[in-house]
Image (cartoon, rainbow, N blue to C red; front, side, top):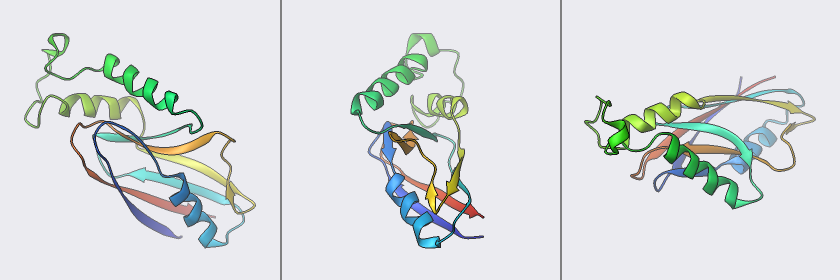
Length: 140
């Protein structure tokens, strides 16, 4: 079963699209049908399939998650215990727990069965730049 690790560099909180890398991987296999599993190897970021046409969607998602889970320095978050790595650390873990670290995408006729406006994103929840590893695994 083919597998590939891709590295994504982030510049802080936000959504980083990598649909093209997944598309290239699936295309290189020459497989007809199967399932692409996408898995991120970290606990303070996650994965999303989301609209990739209007950048306002990404802006609004970032704003929503910031409001939902503010930094631990926010007075509403004084209950947070895990603060060793900064005020964005535990909130990043919470955001990752609310989203997903693994996504399954069907493949048919050699292509991922994504909708017209769907893209695959790494959702970075930390403020500082990070190098994130995503595993693409095909079963067919």
